[in-house]
Image (cartoon, rainbow, N blue to C red; front, top):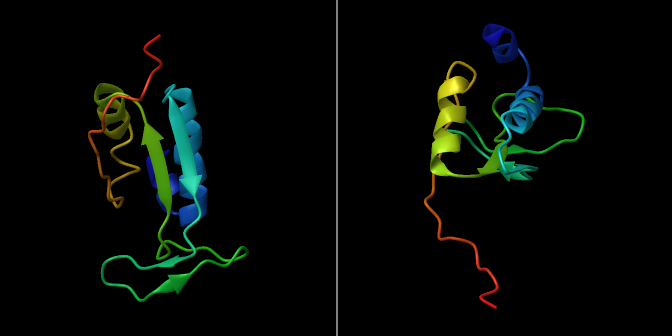
Length: 98
């Protein structure tokens, strides 16, 4: 099944990863549209709503505990082998102390 997703366009892969993140019960996931950008070794590309390819950057942001995010990366390592994953350790969210 994994090799199937590698033959799809970047938007289809991003949608797949979004759905499996929901099934993995990741707390919050956002798929962000990138208006323009480039990937290592490629030219600048611009977003076009009807065209998408693997050379246009995609941004799927997942927010949860480090353990759950690392498990997600491990469980989907084959699908993510050409993906640059960045883990940022963030502060705890603000809460009302009253």
